[in-house]
Image (cartoon, rainbow, N blue to C red):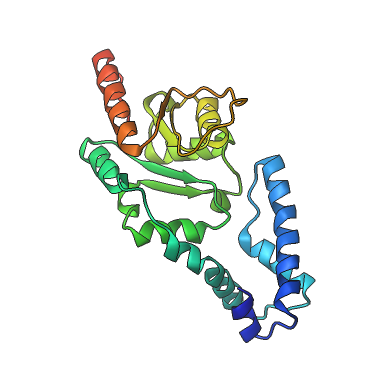
Length: 221
């Protein structure tokens, strides 16, 4: 981001820019974490540039600066080996799917999905930046359910965060599957409906639940 802005008239050295960036981002993150909201990334970057006395005359410059910052992240991004297979399997089984992501950048969420052609699997894609609220706030889960026209009792939420995904899903009555990618804090007593170590394992659990609910006359979507 600094390199791009420097080419477009930003004065000052990279160390000052980095310190200002970190300070303002840490402050914004603290407020977002405390209130479970999401401050738009453009607002954060504008605050940084105002602090550095840099006036953005063209909004395109701001958007390009953000794109330059996230470019390496998107380039380095990879998907787990069973991602496409699992999503394809769920789609073939007739499940409706949505995505809810805590992210400071809605653009980055869509760019990553487009990189791997994953957006085709989802009927709704929601980011915290686009809605201004973070998981585990119930509103973001309810928006996804409404968009898919699915009831909470018919849905399963799969995520890798106990605090954001499992607690958020439970708040609105959605069954949860926790994908444990790394060791968890033993003091965290959050109890998901199922714990797995891979998406393919989650797929098997969803199919089992669906079959059980079909017998009871209430399908999982």
